[in-house]
Structures are given as structure tokens and as C-alpha cells.
Image 1 (spheres, rainbow, N blue to C red):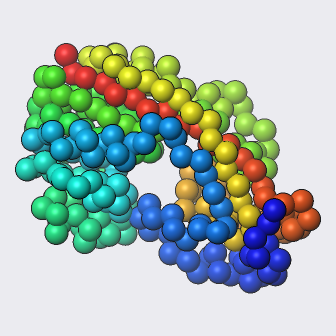
Image 2 (tube, one colour):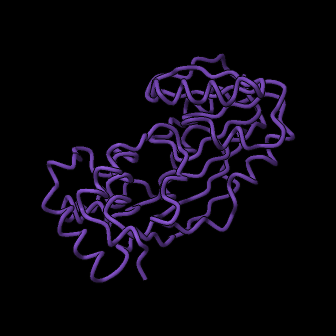
Image 3 (spheres, helix red, strand yellow):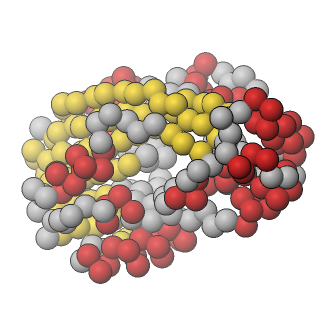
Length: 257
């Protein structure tokens, strides 16, 4: 079953999606236009529970700070890092009133903190996890708690635009690889869970906005470059209903020995 958006013109839907801001990790723009199942473990709730019992916490790649800011209680020392300037601005506005500091730090740079600074490190959907840096800034007995994008996530979308992907790309974010990397950094994995979740795109504008926001899915994406595929997909949604994909997520919790 399609929504009213699917019956609007291609030009109208694409123009609206291109004009929409893509900073932060607020996905309310997709309401009524796209859906994604939520993982069963409730990351934000579980993260909030751990924050309530921590003294010093670090949230890595915080985006616009939305998940961290939603926690009812923050530790006495709470710091977030973010590498994209528009998100740094947004996270600062959201988190400073809560007493949390936001540090502009490139994703691939060493964490700008001393050894053993935090008893809790969190991260939701990091682009890449630098396990040795996480282990370095954790105190003995401290915990890393993270929800991550799993293997071949939303690859129905990726491969629609880019064609079949090599096996090493499809399996590049495997949970067991994360376990091995965590252990190699001196961390003990105490929880590891994976979920495959249904996604539905109800109009082409939702697809365009998704690819503008989650830029690593189709790295060279522009409306102009992929206009033939976009127009074809617009017609497909209009006649067949939502474009269905499946995201993968995994939850990992690791403790420093």
C-alpha cells in the first residue's frame, strides 16, 4: 500500500528531498514516507541505563547529539566527539544545556583524551570503530556499548544503484569480525547480538533523502548522475508499492580487563 507521496510527480518529490536539510541524525523527515524496523534490544534505553550509573562517559561520533541528549540523566562528566562541522554545531546546541562537552574531532584521528579517562564509551552507528583507541581511553573495568551497522545493510538500495557488490564488501561489517577486533585490543566481549530489519521506501523522495543523508551507501550519489535509475524506481514504486530493503544491525558490549 502506498502513501499519497507516491502519486506526486517525480520532479516535485525529488526537489523536496534535495531541499531538505541532512545534518544530524534526526529522521523525522521520513515519517509517512519510509519505515524501518527497530532492533529488539532498544539501544537508546539501554544506553541511558548505563549512563545513569557512570561517572565519566564519552559518546563517539555523536552526530547531532540526539541519542545522548535523550538520556534522562547524564554522568557528572559527559563528553561527545563529532567530525562533521554541521553536526558539531547541532550537537553543541543540544548537549551544552545538559552540561555535556562537544569536541570537534575527525573520525579517523586518535581520540583527544588521556589514557583511562572514561568508565563508559558509547557509539551509535560509528562509521568505523577504532578499537585500540577505545581500549586506551577506557578505565580498567570500563565498558564500550555500541549499536553498529551490520553486513550488507540496505544492500537492496546499494546494489540497485551500483550493481552487485564483491563478497568482501558485503561481509565487511560482520559482528564476528568486531568481536575479534575488540579482543585483539584487549577487550572482553560480553554481549553480541544481530538483527535483520525490514525497510520500506514509499516514494522516490525518501530514497533521495536517504542517500543524501547516509552518504556512504552510494558515495558518488547525485540526482543528476543517477536520474535514469531514480525515474525508473519512481515508476516502480507508483505501480508496485514500496521499495523494500533490509538493514542489519548488531549490538556489541565489551569490557576492559
